[in-house]
Every structure is written in C-alpha cells, then in structure tokens.
Image 1 (cartoon, rainbow, N blue to C red):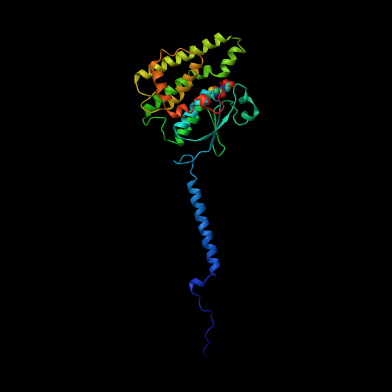
Image 2: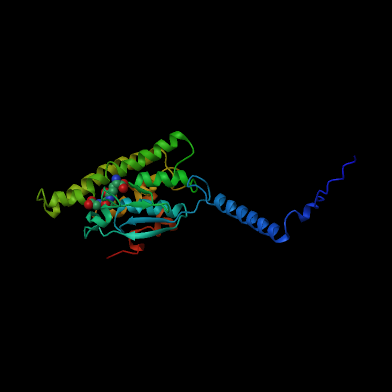
Length: 266
Ligand SMILES: N[C@@H](CCC(=O)N[C@@H](CS)C(=O)NCC(=O)O)C(=O)O
C-alpha cells in the first residue's frame, strides 16, 4: 500500500524565519553592542598614548615640590584640578588630608581612577612613563642618569634640609632665632648650587641638560625661587642662573610659578 505523502510544512524562505520586527530588534542590539565595544576601546589605559587624565593635584603655591609637578604637568600639556592645601595653616596635618596621604606632605596626585601618588619625583616619573611627550628624560641611558643626578642634587641634597618642617624644628624645638635659621637655609643652598654649577660646566647648554627642559629643570627652578625668597646670594652661579632664565621664558614655567597659582598670597 502506498503511503500517503506526509503533509510536512514547506520550509519558509529565509527572510520569513523571524517576523521583521524581531530582526530589527536583533540588528538594533547588535549595533548597540558594537558601539559599546568601541567605547571600551577608546577608554585607554594610562600607559597608552592619548589617555586623557582628569587628575587632582593637592598642592600649595609656595611648595617647591608641588611647583616641580606643576611644571612637569604644564610641559606635558596635561590639565589638572588644583586643590590647595594651606601648609602655613597646617592643613596638611588635618585628617581631611592625612586620610588621603599618610605622609602628610604635598604634592599628592590623584588619578581619575582614585589612585594616589605621593612624592614629586615619583609623580613626575609616573607622568613621564604614561605621557612620554614632551620627554623630561633624555633618550640615552647616560643622559637619563645625568638628568636624574642633577634633579636629585636639588631634591635630595638641598630641599630635605630646608623644607618647612625642618625650619620649624630649628626655630621651635631647637630654639634657633631667625638669623640662625636663615644662615642654615643659605648654607645648604650654597653647597647644593655650587655642585650644580660645577655639573653644568661639564656640558654647557641652554637648559640643565641639552636644549629642551628636563626633570632637572623642574627641580632647579623652584629651588631658585625659594633661594631668592630667602635672599641667598646667587651671583656665584652664572650658568645655573642662565638656565633658570631660559626656563622662565617658557609658558610652562611661568604658569606654574607661585604667583600664578589660584591660592597665591603676597
Ligand atoms: N620629598 C618630597 C618632599 C615633600 C615635601 O617636603 N613637601 C613640603 C612642601 S615643599 C611639605 O609638604 N611640607 C610640609 C611640612 O614640612 O610640614 C617630595 O618630593 O614630594
């Protein structure tokens, strides 16, 4: 007996597999997924070029360590939010600030992801690694060593002996008068700048090292500002002062100087 043909439904043409509004729905979802994938790709990691920072810099107009970082940020064309911490009023020792930085020192850089970096040299090296342009360290290893040595001559040999808490300790705990404090200050500046001047003579250039500003200049310029505030005699350092003048011709240095800061005082 012949079997009756099965009455199977005829396959539908592909375009009718799903109702048109379902297709439109899936196409729309697919477009949205693609769009969000593109968004993730453009949110670069800090190590990728083009990453946009929304950084906060806790600092003080007269702080030379903060001044170094302001110069570096300006040289690299990075914008930041300026958050003043009034050192003379002791705001850096209050819980609002020490809860952010247990060191209780400025500068403090907060990244847009909330991570915080202390210590001006660590901050500048971080900026250099994440934003190689404009370079603050030379391309060659020996050049980088020289720039770091010049920078540390100021940041490690002079500044730690002359910062606010050291001067306060001299006058308060050790009962030294204003004249003794100033003599202490000028002594360490003179030793540091003599060494700096001698190092500049090894390889004379427009800036501390070569024809573009480096980390060494970020450290030198704030130290000269402080030395001038303490009436140090700078006439014995013509090379150093010529470098200082060259730096101060640049916008990045001008805009970072204490008098240009939002919290500036006379
Ligand atoms: N080595 C630190 C020094 C930081 C530092 O001493 N900052 C000073 C202002 S320049 C400060 O916060 N002083 C507060 C105090 O001495 O009590 C750096 O380079 O960031």
